[in-house]
Image (tube, rainbow, N blue to C red; front, side, top):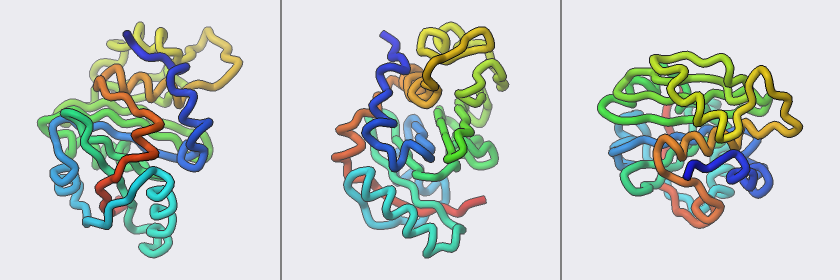
Length: 201
């Protein structure tokens, strides 16, 4: 059964340090090492738990003078989860589309100002892209292919007037619908992540 936005409200409540600015990406069929290579990443020490990743991200940003972004990765079945605190590589078409060659790439991003992007690519083709807060404006080769699913998940369109903004939890639910991979509190707290830094373009 398709998860809904309500199934991911825990993210903003339990992980406020990353929830205000993040990018989560799922890539099918590539290991963390293969994904790191594809992104021309530089290996860094592994980190346990998302809190350590967030702390290291901001420390590394200062050290690198904003030129490189820390990424954290872990395999989840046939997929690799890539997390960027305060990053956006996963939804940057110039990097995401080439990196999606021969695979599936599902990414969603929010920045501290509330601007967001959901991006789904298959083998360098942009299938769907939109801002989760404004899902009525979609583009890609299949802009309407998931419209019914998006409504069931809890995205609000022009004719809706939401009492609470659930666009970020809805993006997590849509990513799970496309990949079959659930992001959980235990995963974020207990995983030892493979880490790297990548050049910001």
